[in-house]
Image (tube, rainbow, N blue to C red; front, side, top):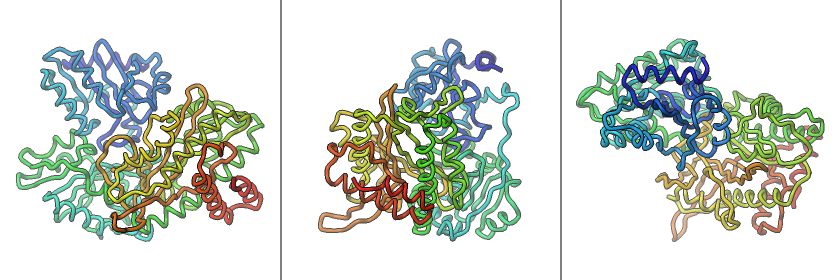
Length: 592
């Protein structure tokens, strides 16, 4: 079926079922950012492959609502699909709901598949539309009847990690969650989010590309810990290990029926942002529901010393691969044989040579020249630039290792550097350094670090449209909550042990893009009469190019930070490099 034929088939079903507006979120029953093929509904329906967006369909209009990261990509991918791009004014805001309310008359019906919509999204739809007389049905799947050859749910084997890797046993983690439930006076808890489940049971899998997770749900109360999972994924050894921690196994599809067995004496904690509406709606009537963040979300965001030490080792291995990569780029760019796609493949191969490598942590963004100005660009055959000895190359990439997750962005000049490129690069670098050097009182929120990072960039009347940073998991999802460094006033304090990216950028459409990203660890610094203070330890180990730096735009402290950082990179990586590679890196890290 073509995209136009799919849209026609959806509209025909809408007409048959009396549905006037249909919503298709980019999600799954676990409210995941990255999806198994079975749940890539937006891509199948419209052709749009970005990780954030919502389709809204009426008989007269079909639109994709997405944010500025995907405007260019969406415009290209939606061509001839029957869907139009609608640009979100505020990232992640449900603006399509307001639009539906304006378009549809009183008495109309809006529907969606509750397995794809979070409780928070469902509540936004209901609270906006029902007061104006628009009916809402959250239990309608219009795609499955017309999706011929739909991929099956994954059945790959899951595996557990030893305590020598995780630093904390499953028994200890379950006890920690139960303690939080007791404090909140909840008697039960359901976890839908896959990274929370993976953390809790020290279990990993390959069900979602780039994310070492396995599909499942977890139920916990005072006496039970249940893992709902397709049992074919578990070996007898894994089942025995989970059983030793008191974990019971039930079928993946049994979770909603199990929730119907709860009683009026139960108080179940559900995370409205990470629980789908269909799961929420299956809780037995009369059961009290406490809507709150999963306890495991904060517990896993604060890394223990074992995880932190492993993460430092992963950074060294990642830095070795990146050093080899940028050396190779420099030596081969004149051959006219390198492209955005081929260099991404080669970087993956280099990472795969490193100890403990499992996968990349997201699709590599290799943006040459004007493609670098697209923050979430992914090279495709029709857009794949050939590299030349001129212009800027932005590479945003990461690896999944058994000892940690990495995420790094670097920009290098391939030749014919312009003053505008140097200025944008130096100003961006200044922001990265400002954020990395920040000293802040305990209790500081992410939006305050965001402002510190942007301050020197704003001073030049420049800005960037994405957030400054996101949490990163330990051999888990590259985007991890609950904390973020962005302008949104998220009321989550920065805690000791959190790992976060600092990644300011500057983008000139049609010219170039610059982003310089390191991961940092938040840690205690000192306590005095004015309170407790914290700072960051930079974890990422890869040289920052200095030939793009205009030192006249930096202060002495910035230059010292850069020189110290690059010297540390050389000291950390050179023992693992060949003599030729070490000499090359020595030149790249020399003081300016």
